[in-house]
Image (cartoon, rainbow, N blue to C red; front, side, top):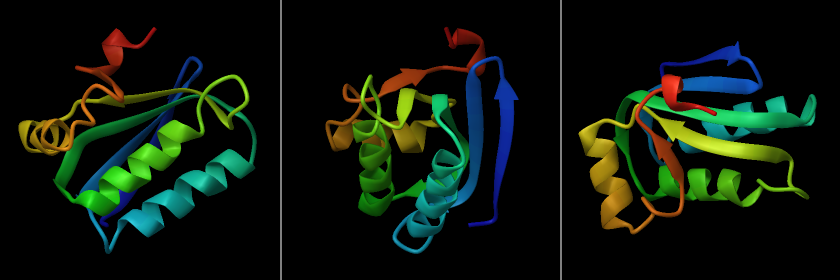
Length: 111
């Protein structure tokens, strides 16, 4: 993992993941996000996938874990994926997870 960038737009905390989202880096990414969650309740977590070069099943598992923590009783109220490049959308579609996540084209589509 090269870097994780964080910015806030309104109620949304946007995390841009750069590099590989795979078995080697997904635990680091998950820990980073869990640290953010433990510091306070997140109203809306948005993962910007535009700079993800590769994602495997470990990255998918990390995303699914985060998604499972959303909702009224969860740590995160809303969870979105934005700016998913074609290679990442292929992984999501092949796994059948493209319907599980709220996927938006860009941050401009955030409610």
